[in-house]
Image (cartoon, rainbow, N blue to C red; front, side):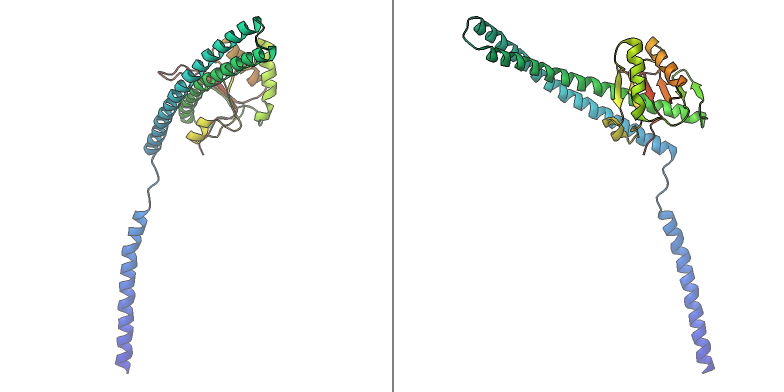
Length: 259
């Protein structure tokens, strides 16, 4: 009986040792199987890939718009030809004034379609260039470390003012009024709030707007001085993307961070 009891204990000890060895062997395997956190190099590569993909998508989008533009421009020519004919018929008393007005309205509508597509093409250029500039600028800014509230940082490529207090996009009206009264023209806002490119890049731009002004120009300098004197945060970018017509601009609001 005693031998049997000792034998049972020995078996249990052996089983416990074996289980411990198995658990020890399995645990490192599970631990090593965990996906490694992406390195800064991998993140930079991902962002670069995302940029290239968006550039391609934008170029494809613009190419399709160019085809649409050609169709709309042809529509304008046809509408103008019909209008000219209607004017001649009206002068001869063969059609009513209402019919002539309809022909005039058709020309106006056709021209609006053309200008709408042209604006879309121009906006695609501006948005991608300005966003690329901001991403590159934020990379440089990150190397400088945290910026205290109310601080102004100047480099050869950008100016960054951290502002005083909390600024909201709903307060943009005061900036627009200042610019309109000073330069007798509307503030050239390229992007107001979140744009398509920001969604593509996963950038939070909800509480910011981009203004198409060169920071080194007279209008850009006046706007920068107004923003700083009112404690409004901004980033003014001087750099341009090679091969892209636009780029330098003033970003009003806090920097756009990835989400």
